[in-house]
Amino acid sequence: QVQFVESGGGLVQPGGSLRLSCSASGINVNQYTMGWYRQAPGKERELVARIFNWDSPPNYAWFLEGRFTISRDDAKNTVYLQMDKLKPDDTAKYYCNAVNTILTPVFSSWGPGTQVSVSS
Image (cartoon, rainbow, N blue to C red):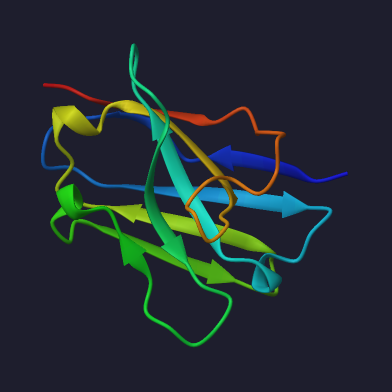
C-alpha cells in the first residue's frame, strides 16, 4: 500500500521560508517522478514542482519565479520542498505524489497534506 506523509508546514510571514518533507512508503521515490501539489481553499489542486527519476533538472510551475526548490533523499525515501520568499498566494495545503507524463498524480491515495499559511 502506497502512503505519503507530508510535514513541515506552518504559519510564516511574507518573505519567510519553510521546508516541507514527504515521507513515502510502499514505493521507492527514486523510481518515480515525484511532485509537490498544492490546493488553496476554493481552488483545484495544482502541481508546483516535480523531480524526475532520470538525470534531468527539476521542473517548476511558472508562477514560482524560482522561489521553491524540490529535492530527494533516496536513503530516507523522502522528497523535500524548500520554499523561500513566501507570498500570501502560497497559502495552501501541500501534498506529494508521484507524477505521470500528463502531470496528473499516479496514485489515487493522498496523504494528509501539510498546511502552509503565509500572513503578516
